[in-house]
Length: 232
Image (cartoon, rainbow, N blue to C red; front, side):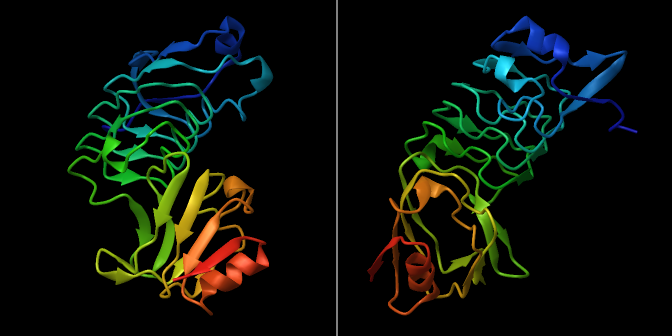
């Protein structure tokens, strides 16, 4: 079928080359390269990762349909062109790079939580959504659970809304804002549950200011984790 083909993973041969420029082939053994596997070029997870020079440039062919979880996490990419063949971008796929702007093509219908977090994106307007996406939030409309955000710049002040796409935000999922350098977060009173690690390693807790209503779940969470709370 149309999805027959290969998915790319990092290889020992590539590690041995110690290159920071990567051109992914469009074909392998006569079949198209249709995907980039989870953790494929994640600096922190690749086999023999300590030998791996972080990527600065990549070229993704227009045969690729999906980019896996943390596929390019923790590199030094300054720009990336996502081809209009891509329909799926996994969680933290391009997190912790040096990207300044991101353009997501119309073909993309799913972007995982924090796919572009921890980059040099100074304004949310620097992330251009394609026609296949409606907003920046990763949200389960059936359960009211907030699972993350497509792209959070470094030192970002985050305002979580009461509702997304007309549905009330009632909870914050595990690792929703994992390891992101947030300065402050406003959590609405509609949120009745925050997972223990919802903000795990985000500026090491202590440096984040939590804003919310007195007596709310936000205040309870802040006090439990030694975070500063300001009632609004």
